[in-house]
Figure 1 (cartoon, each protein chain N blue to C red):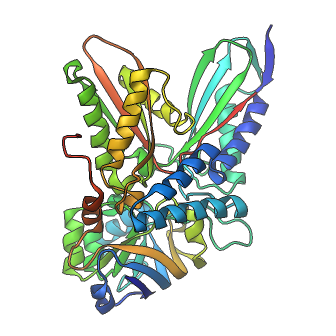
Figure 2 (figure 1 turned 30 degrees about the horizontal axis):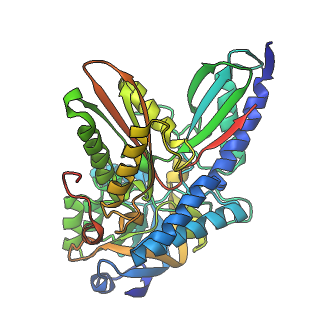
Figure 3 (figure 1 turned 120 degrees about the horizontal axis):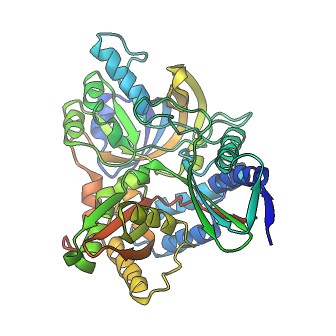
Length: 188
Length: 281
């Protein structure tokens, strides 16, 4: 099903999304990838406060290429989500509403998605030029010293993504593959 | 005859090649993606392949990198033994080209100076440089920026000789199956069979720079490439890992003699943005 949704996302909306839904996201989202996650994790371990209130926020695993003059951002596609798995359950428990990335998630992350009525979207990996056209503003809001890995606040319009793991734990990566699988486990 | 080549010319060319590779996908890659889009059976898979084609048009027309991961620069140099290099050291010349390409070309700086301390070098240097001395008086440069979504899913298997060709097939399928959606399929699969631990990995990397879809000249290797492409596409992973009949665009296999006790196999996976630009000076 095609859906237009807003970011930040509320739990009711997140709960209504099903694995396989094609969504267009409009609103405000934040970027964070490896180094920003590690820093947030360390801050929480020391009892500190995060630079962004995560409640309902959509976090995009992305580190853009530099913007040319007069442009909002450079190429801006998703990075592999599993590298964030170690840090994700804690962020979901703090209220993070959804994530946009690509690739598989750990069982611990899937449990945390279910526990918090959250959702995991995939954007098309390697389509960074196309996806950058849906970003209308970009501002570094924390960890500027991390360069491409800084936390950015983005305004997005009709950003295309696919629900891969929904709040019930359904996983499109597992179900969709079965439909087209012809090579048997032993390679025959 | 000794021919003199200025290393500053190598710098200038590498700078241009880094920018070219990240904005204009080579014709062979564009052709296999177009072909896959026509044949893909999954409607969602087809839609994703269409998006990838649109992405390539936007990248080249508006000079936005095809992918934000503009890679770690892998540079292959084949230097004729009758060439005399004049100027800065070859390694410095290559790194200077990468530095200029990535800073001047608005490419992402994705390299950390130490693998554990992890501070960004801010100019994407150093490159990974592979140099070979060959007959002749030319310098052949291949620039292949490598993204790490797919690099991270690459594998080396030290098989036993008794495992034979079935073991090799299994290793390739295991690597691709485990890579799944993480490696940004449809992928190009580079395979090195034989040699030593490092030789097979290098062959797998080199295999990715081959003209996409061109086959090995060794008949049984060509057959293996065709068989593995069919089997990989039968895994059902599909474009974006969301199901479909296009999981790989090509399988390229290179082989080399090996030891009586070994059968090394390396599988270097590349995403659909399999960048490779070649120039001869």
